[in-house]
Image 1 (cartoon, rainbow over the protein chains, first blue to last red):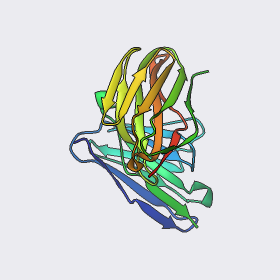
Image 2 (cartoon, chains in turn green, brown):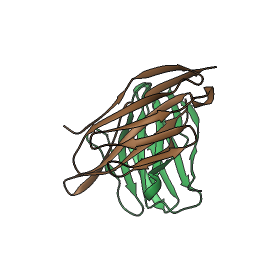
Image 3 (cartoon, each protein chain N blue to C red):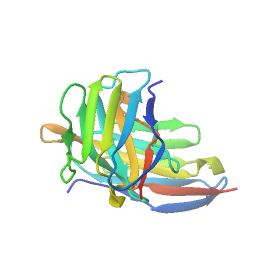
Image 4 (spheres, chains in turn red, orange):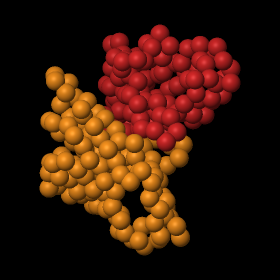
Amino acid sequence: GAVVSQHPSRVICKSGTSVKIECRSLDFQATTMFWYRQFPKQSLMLMATSNEGSKATYEQGVEKDKFLINHASLTLSTLTVTSAHPEDSSFYICSAPRGLYGYTFGSGTRLTVV
Amino acid sequence: EDQVTQSPEALRLQEGESSSLNCSYTVSGLRGLFWYRQDPGKGPEFLFTLYSAGEEKEKERLKATLTKKESFLHITAPKPEDSATYLCAVLYNAGNNRKLIWGLGTSLGVNP
């Protein structure tokens, strides 16, 4: 149980275009979703926290106009990378809190901007 | 400064050669320490949560322990399929909020 489905797993896009990443909680309701990015051989860096029905909270240094987060329902949170540039290329992962079981993660999205 | 430090950065073992990974932390108001396994190109997979010093948890060849300043992940008689990056994260009270910080991980390779 407690599965978070993340799509797409890989995406290549042209510089200047936008990319949407979806995370769905399949068998539970996720009132909160955390969005991370991870660079090679580096730890998870929290970008923002989304809460169903309210505005996302962004970490210091993360551009909210560039990384649009929407959490319109209890089972779906989306991250849209707008006007993507090569420096946005990274591994993006979503995560939902699961109480005693810590946090359940999506399988990640490898974004490559060319 | 609140920090989570994992060591070693990388470890290579022979199959069957037991060892331990370390996660040391300098936070106050610990609410929980988590261990995760991450395979390349995948999201982290939950292993254990530890809440208080002295607590231990086991799962197959893995055993996690916790003291007031560090946690160990003991791997007994590892197999090649245990090769992965092991991540540690600490949830703690930060003012009126809770914060979660991650270590950089230990990359474990197990040779057959």
